[in-house]
Every structure is written in structure tokens, then in C-alpha cells.
Picture (cartoon, protein in one colour):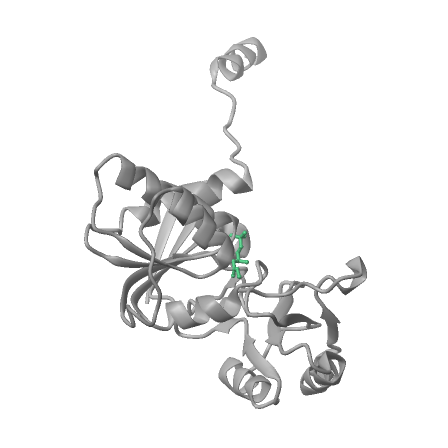
Length: 251
Ligand code: 5RP
């Protein structure tokens, strides 16, 4: 009867809806399980990676991990890791990294990524390009069919010198997709400056990028472009946290 149905529904616990930040934390904590004592670790940047760094600091403090060396991908992560007592070094001293953990803005079905909304794409690409394993951690909202199709910007680090000239060149590369190129934070009066003293041009594409490798190479051929935010064929594992649980995708 309807009364029975009502009492049944009243006795069920309310559904648990996790926030995006809680999902980020779930993915980050799962990735921390991949960390072993003695590892050289690439430490990512952004709100998801921050949870992973927090967790690594906690495991060190609890004595569950030891002999870790962190290679931070930004000044921000460097400060966070230092405050947690994680010993740090750099790529000059440790050209090979065992494992890097970092977030992403977009993840496609082949585990290609767009990164850089936190602005640290250059150091991230250097560190993650030097690691044996790169575990990318995301909540399910980051999954896309094609990179560049989510309406978010593709970030490109450029030297400050004549950035408008280069923004024009970048826009021309993607002309067929009705591309708009903007300087990050230009509207706030002062452009965003990366840890390397550069600017970020954000490319808003009207449709997905075709051949990612070809597009990436064309971007890098522009003198004054330092790096772009497509991380092609770099992630070895992606951990996705969603309302229904954790999915681990391996390459
Ligand atoms: C920083 C990045 C970040 O990993 C990416 O922007 C995701 O950020 P968040 O974890 O805050 O969603 O690439 O350059």
C-alpha cells in the first residue's frame, strides 16, 4: 500500500551526495596508496593534487612512509610540501622520478589530458615527462570524449614579450573552430604570471581538437610559445572518483 511505501521510504537513509571536492579527495587518497617508501615523487598542483600532498604528509607523519623525496611542480606545492615536512628536491638532482600524482582539467578515453588551469603546466610537463608512472587524479566531471570540447580553455604558456602577436598566431591556427584567445586575468587588470615569469594565453575552442599531436606540434613551433597544456600519452593511470565509486583506468 502507499502507507507501506511511505514508511519504507522514511526508513531508508538519505542518499549521500558527495561534493566535487570530496570526490577529488577520494581520488587523491586512492593515489596515495600507490606511494611506497623510498620513492622520488612528483607532486602535482591544484585542488585535487593538494589533497594527495596532504595525504602523503600525513602518511609520513604517521611513520607509514619514509625516505620520500618530493619534486614539486609549482611554488604553491613547494610551500605546501615544506609546511608538511616532506623533503624536497628537483629534477637537476633527480632526473628520474618513480611516481607523479597530479590532477587534470580534461581526460579523454585514451588518457590524454588538458592541464594548466592552475597555471603550472610547464613544470608539470617537465616533472611528469620524467616519471616512470604518472597517476592522474580526477572527479568524474573532468571526463570528456575529445580534448578541447568541454568549453574550457586550452592554456598555453607564452613569453610576455608581444603576447598579443602570439595570441593572434594561436587563434589563426584554430581559425576553423571559431577560436578565441585571451590572456589569463587580463580582465582583472594584471595578467596572471606563471612561476617561470610567463603569461598564459587561453584558447577557447568552439569544437574539439582534431589530431592532438599535430595541433600540439604546430603550437610549439610558434616562437615565444613555451608550452601547451595538452599532456598526450603521458598518464599511465587515471583514477576517477564518481558518485558510484572509484574507477582506475590503466594505459
Ligand atoms: C594545474 C593543473 C591542475 O591539475 C588542473 O588544473 C586541475 O585542477 P584541480 O585539481 O584544482 O581541479 O593542471 O596546472
